[in-house]
Length: 286
Image 1 (cartoon, rainbow, N blue to C red):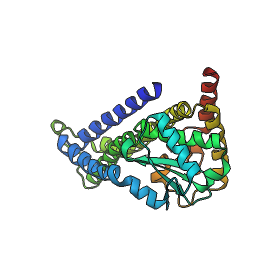
Image 2: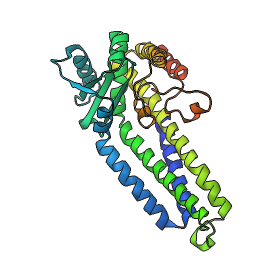
Image 3: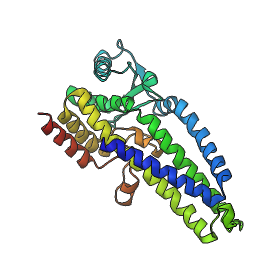
Image 4: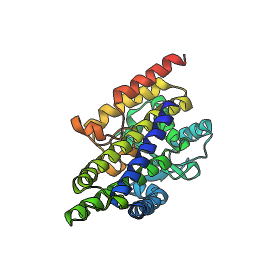
């Protein structure tokens, strides 16, 4: 429940930030134009991103006949979660990772790399796939799309403010809702960064929730904790081929590397904290 409330709060912050940016541009007209542009782009992403990302990573769909053990595992977990059977894919990559995609539970897909199938025990693999099915059950793809829509709109408005300031349009009449040139420039720079950080925080909250829900689905929190520990270690040594920042939030462990300031913009919570929460959950349920 805490993660759900946190997600609601963060989405509300994005809404407030968007309204403030719209006012800085010069009223409701500029805000609505930028918002509609971002909404159209993200609407297309919501409907077609599953096909795009699966093709991007050369994911190959499997059936029960092609890979009976893995397909059967996903089928059992989907039944436990009360979900329709998703499409199942394998990504030909040695880096251990997995993700879920699709616009709703009836149009979902789960994908795992060859690396994750190779290094995990059956119990650990169940934990990973339960985590991905939890994303489907919790409708995280929809929530991520909403967050991306607001963040995209804020970024667009920030660009509008910067161009306006460059051409002397930063100073507007107070009755029109505009601010000073300096105020507009500050908001144009700070607001998109703040929006991106809020969007990343939304993603991190959903990861915690998917860990807890996934542990409930598979019934073994420690198996998922062990899987995360392995995936974090090996994925750093064997990076995912052609990993992209735009899709990093989809994977169970971050396929990108980087520390320090990069941690502020990470789509994933600290691995130590995820494992600690799962271990605490195992203690409470036994």
